[in-house]
Length: 448
Image (cartoon, rainbow, N blue to C red; front, side):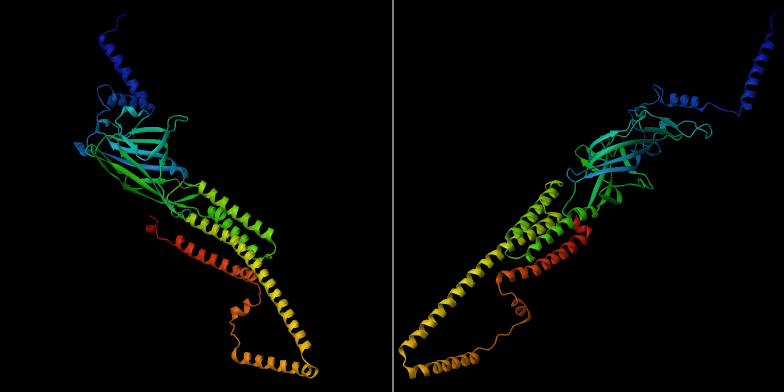
């Protein structure tokens, strides 16, 4: 049976009404994923968007495109003194306005569009100027996204790991502070076409539980570092990370062992001067140990042309240990000299005794009995008169406390040991006072 045309139109109208009624009953839900696809095809479709052309300037002018940058430091894995570099993992973000990407947000219900392919839109040609190595993270998926907002703003975020150069001044090592920079610049676009700016409000963020094995991140500073070449001026950003070296590790591993070696070398001053094997072996052992430790310290540092604080410390400690070994050589020489002097004195006394006995025997042979009875009295009177003259002419020497104390040690070798027991610790204490007051309380301006 044929249906009249007005009835067919009425049927179509009823179907449309039922469809609208069904949508209303379902709460007016819209397939936003389908809408996103339609919008992306609309703004990024063939012939609609060219990623090779940079965006316009502010307010659609022909000025440079402005890119706001901020970074989030996730971790700093190492700071290498030998190669003068550090490794950092960060989330890098850029944000700019591209009016060609504006779209309808469906009454505020579509906040942004998400892309994972950076080549679909125009990207700033930023590079890290002090980079040595770097790589992206692709596990499980590439750690990158692009968000396009309804007003045309584009947010680009990516997680990267970098190994960056960090020139260091090690004059105060290990009591030093190092400033490591992260520099970002445009590679091909000059400031007439592209300008990088730090994002207002916390342009650099650092993870709260940042842990470094031998350093502490004291602070960080953001700045601009535009560079001029013969091809133009290029926009550049930099962030300076100020690291302070942790001293406790070096105190336990270097300074305290060196002090102990120096003090052990002083034990030879208290050993008997005749214990030659013990004193020689102690001096040589401490000297070799100190030299080995000094070599180990320098092996973990780059060969620089200036003197470091640790070089001053190890050099002076090595000098003290070597001085203790030389002191024993001096004591040994003085001991042999004292023995030779005592032997000479003993020989002289024996010769004088023999000569006096010979003279007395001659007198006994030549004198008569009467004269023999008188000679001893005359000779004793002459000796007594000469002794009284010596007592009158020679006043007793005045002895101060130091001489009086030193007179307790009759030999020169013993005196050298006693003086060394006092002099070496005293000079080492004065050196420590000068060393720590110089390097601990030095101003930051002098460090540079």
